[in-house]
Image (tube, rainbow, N blue to C red; front, side, top):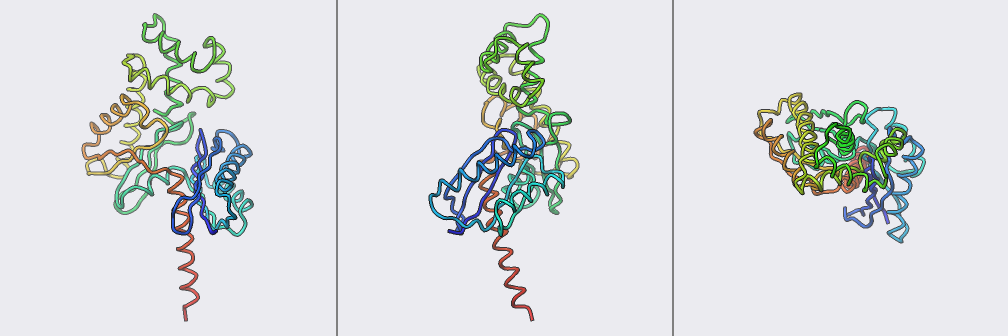
Length: 314
């Protein structure tokens, strides 16, 4: 069966979707993180191979991969994208390969015209386009220089909160639950692990902060309120660069932190509406890997039409 693969790879996991020639989903697979700027290219490529094998093997029928599209974190740099393209072409010979930033997948799913997408997961970024189709982005360059308001940033902020002198009862309780969730007896051991591999620690703190914020913990709410302000500020910078601040513009929210905390979702929405009055906020329900698979299908048929036109040219 002729099929088309779609990948969504980030700092936490990698999803792969298989669709048939009619665009129907026939299988799904998953692998670990595949952001090469965080874990290196060998580990990222192994994760992509695992996700692909998981999805393809789930079909239990012979497949011909006609095209694939991979939206991958860490491919904003041309050399990174080219390296991933080479990997896919080696893994899938005679297959049409399209590699793009993971941020582009949810933007593709937005309505035609001006639109913005806020991605809030392990990392964070905003991407948008104006009415003329010009695309710009803000953020998404890793925790050293950006990713403000992300799960990583929230975990890091919660760690800093635990250092505060004269900590409140809310701080003590949040700190206790974080240590229990991480499985460490004290912060000294957490710091030892996070100094070598912070991705193994900080993003995992988010669910504890989210649950405590929804339960009314003032310290957790303060951390998430600050994160919401950072995310909104990033969106505003993007909207200003696209001249969309004073316009009615659809904004889609997506990423691993979206929908995980009523308090956090509400705080983000309030911050966005206070700064961009015409924003129309929705949660993107479509999975990025599905979008990638449909892009692959579309690109394959576009190429087929182009070949036919060339063949019919006088």
